Image (cartoon, rainbow, N blue to C red; front, side, top):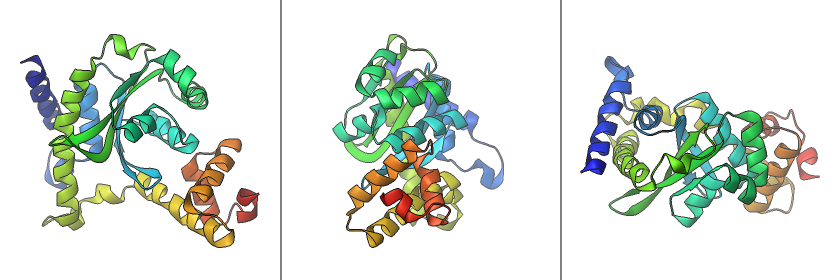
Length: 244
């Protein structure tokens, strides 16, 4: 009964967070993320969609969650990526992040207020959707206040709403009006593939090798993967500098 009530509270939070009036009332991943923060003991949340070798960010509750997501994608390793790869939800407290993913821990500690993370692959009818809900907390021991089954109940309600939004955005009567599909974070992430394509054309590399080199260049130059890709595409960074 408690878990059913949690889903109901989440749906109410979505309605409370959603802007009122006209097109501003459209549901977005940012709204779904902010609603999760309202009902769970976390500081921030974000939603991403996994594609080949890379995730596409769909929306966050605040800018700090965006920074945490970008750094994990830049490094190519971390709790959220592990949860997606394994198809299993997890809560990673500060000691486990530092031990299992030390480069990500260093960036999380340096760039954000977060010290623990939970990640939940989103399912509909018990089938993985390729999307994930990432939860961030300032406290180092999120597992002491967040039960995984509670987080998964919220993720389940969120997944149903998100799937409906994606179907409407791509196939519905108002498909062209779903502007969040083209929001800047998603556009920036897709530019990574443009940079990877340039690298593949210029050298004897496959997509995975090119992406690995771009990640290594970004990390060693204190750039996010998105920023490094944008500068490669804009020719601010020469290909030879990334290819080595």
